[in-house]
Image (cartoon, rainbow over all chains, first blue to last red; front, side, top):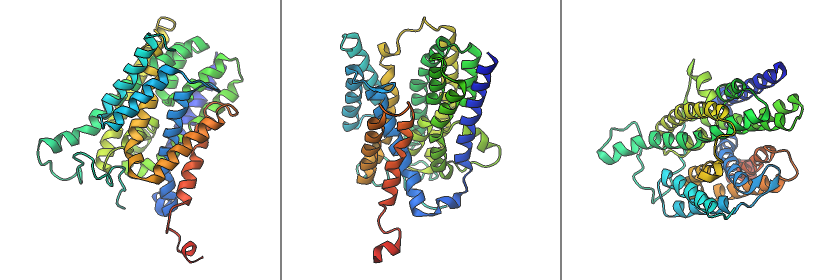
Length: 105
Length: 258
C-alpha cells in the first residue's frame, strides 16, 4: 500500500510541476514569431488528436463505436448550424446515449 | 503587451464579439457576451466533471484506495494521467513505469502553460494556484474566447467548477464503485471529445493552417495508437503544430531572399 502511495504522490508531484513549468517560462521565449506560432498551434493539434483518439480508439486499438461516432457526427452538425457550446455537448451526448439505448453498440 | 491574435477575431460572421472586454458594456447584448466565458466554463465543468465518477470507480476497482483516488484528483488533477496510473496498477504493471507514463502524459500541460501564461498574466501566489488548473479543458475554453480578459474569466470559471465537480465525483465514484451505471448509457463518453471539437472550432474556421494542423494532429495520433503506449500518440501530435509553425510565412527575412 505504501508503494502505491509513493506512486500516487510521485505522479501528482510530476504532473503539477510540469504544469507549473509551462506557466513559468519567461515571456521573452515567446518573442520569436515561430515559437509564438508553435505555442498557439499546440492546443489545436493536441485537442484535435485527443478528440480523435477518444472518439475512435479504445486502449491501444482502433474502436469504431457507432454510438460514439454518431454522437460526434451530431456535434459536427450542431457546430455547422452554429449552435451554442452547451447545445453541442447535449446534442452529442444525447445522440450517443440514444444510439446506445437503441442497441447500436 | 503584444496584441493577442484571438481565435475568433478574424471571423467575419461571428455573432456579437466584443472588441475589448475592458470597454464598458453597451447594453444587454454586451452584458451577455461578458457572461459567456463564465457560463460556458461552468457548463464545461459540469459536463466533464461527471467523468470523475468513472475515474473514481475505475481507480478503486484497479486496487487504489478511496483516498488514493481522491489524492490523485486533488493533487494531479489531470484526467488522462490519473486514468493511466490506475490502468497500469490494474494490469499489475510496475509502479515506477505507471508513474512515469502518467507524468509523461501530463507533459502536454507544459505546452498548454506556455500558451496560457500570456493570457493569464498570473504573478505571485496566483501562479502556483493557476498552474494546478492548466489542463485540456481550461486551455480549450480559454483559447476559445475572443480576448484576454474573457479568456481569464473562462479559465478561472472552468477551473473552479471542474475542480469541484471532478473531486466530488471522484469521491462518489470511488465510494460507489460497481454501483455506478455505465457512462456510455448517458453518452458521457462523447462529452470530452465533443467539447474539445467545439472549443477548437472557431480556430478551425479562422485559418487553413489551423485546419491542416488539426487534421494532421488527429492523423498522427490515430496512426500511432496501435503501436505506442496509450497517451504518447496525443503528445506526438505536437509535431503537427511544429510543422505549422515552421511553415509560418515571412517571419524569417533570410528565407525570403534565398
